[in-house]
Structures are given as structure tokens and as C-alpha cells.
Image 1 (cartoon, helix red, strand yellow):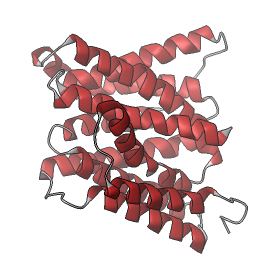
Image 2 (tube, helix red, strand yellow; image 1 turned 180 degrees about the vertical axis):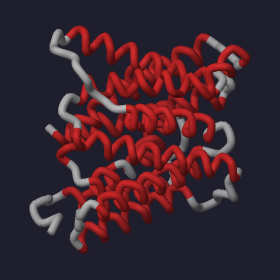
Image 3 (cartoon, helix red, strand yellow; image 1 turned 60 degrees about the horizontal axis):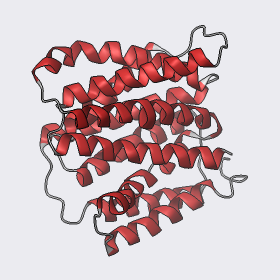
Length: 278
């Protein structure tokens, strides 16, 4: 079951990139409106799910989780208005790797040598996917995407102690919506709006983010911090494959090589798990 749930989570993460790209790249929606609609619809959807299950809803989430989620959402969306998807993926997941593996090591996690080999293979695959042909990124965009990666790493680490994934994700989304409204709320009324853009943002918030992040919080307690970081390296490849299937983008030899390297790295990292940590 954790494997199935993790796979579902990664599909949601990849879908988020496609939905964000679809709304921003075609100027269907302003980045500030996309961010707030994404967070607000996620909070609304999760609040309805919490209410429907008719279980006690006390506490849940934290202001740290809400702030990390808000920081990620704002920085991620704004960064994609300044840099391309390829270099964005490299910066984002590089920052996630550094944050989660670093914190895991500080907390006493000790991956075996074969796990480090898996990390190296996965990172090599990510580099093969993103580096060739990439020019120097916009410095502000690069800074924002690195900040988004750090925030997402912090949000994921907070989820490793989750006892009620649905309630905690719901409360985190509510806090994130409030916090994000402070820096970007005034910009919402001066942005570009289209019906398609609003639908894409709502789908990103309610399904790809709200439901996806809830599933992610449900599997995180079973994953070491460094393992959870490595697994997420599948997302850029999955995004490219979905773009090829849904948007007609070409499947290149570079994509196939990256897929093989990342798949091999993740396989070394998560299977078998009995001898991983010493």
C-alpha cells in the first residue's frame, strides 16, 4: 500500500507542474491569482473532506507547516514566471535534496553505501534531464526556486510526524492561504483572469495539491528523510512523460536515459529496505 500511495502522490506532484505551466505559460492567469486560488481551493476541498468523515477535528497542522507551504506556493509560482521548467526542476529538487538529506543526517539517519550510490544515480539522471542546453537562469528566478525547494523540504519533514494526514493538511492549507494573502493579496485584483486559468488553478489546489499532499503526509512517517527526498526525483521525469502523453511533447533519448538512471537510483534506495539504515 505505501508504494501505491507514493506513486499516487508523485503523479499529483507532476500534475501540479503541468497545471501551473498550462496556466502561466499561456497567460491564462496571473501568478498571484493562481497562488491564492490554488491554496484557497485546496483549503476548501480539504475542509469539506474533514467535515464529511464526521470525526473529531481538534488541532492539527502547525504554523510552521502553513508558513512552509505558503512560502513554497508563492516562490514556486513566481519563479516559473522568470525561469524555464527544466532549470526550475533542477533547482527545486536540488534544494529539496539538500534540505531533507541534510536534516536527516543531523538527526542521526545513516544511509548505507548502496543508498548513497542510489542518490548519485538519481541525481545524475536529474542532471541528464535538465542540464544539457540550459542557459544561466534568471538570478531572481533561481533564488525563488531554491527558496521554494527549501520550503517544500521543511514541509515534508514536518509531515513525518503526522498522525492525522487529512486534518493536518487541511489546517496547513488554511494557514497557508491566510499567510500567502498578506504578500500577494493586493496583486490579485490587478492580474489577468480567464476561465481556463481559474479552472487550472482550482484543479491544482483541490486535487493535485490538497488530495496529493494529504496522501504524501500519510506515507511520510514510513520514509526516512533522505529516502523521501530521493523518491521525489521521479517527479521531473514523470512530468516530462505526462507532457509527452498529454501535450504531444517529444520523448527524447535524453529523457529515456534520465528515466533509466533515476529509476535505478530510486530502486537502490527503497528496495530492499531491511539493511538500509545502520
